[in-house]
Length: 103
Image 1: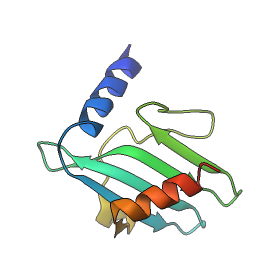
Image 2: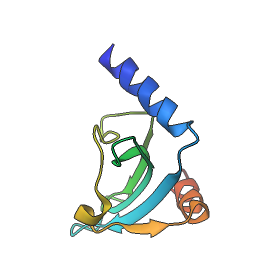
Image 3: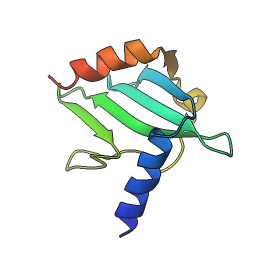
Image 4: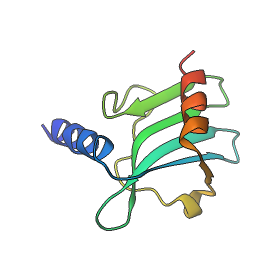
């Protein structure tokens, strides 16, 4: 039931009228990361969509409608873009990259 509450909370945040912020980054292992976040009342960035392209060439995508699978999961807490060296994207750029990872 905790999973259901988490899913409902993330969906409500995603569908709220709060601004959405988009990020991308690459880690030292060559993973490409994408995040769509929404800022909560405390000013923290909560991921509502997250995608990655691993060095294995496999794309993984997570959202409130697909929180986890055998490869990974949507972050369970807020992210801090500066801590991960993430760079801002526009909504259009994020949408293009998200769509490309679904192919």
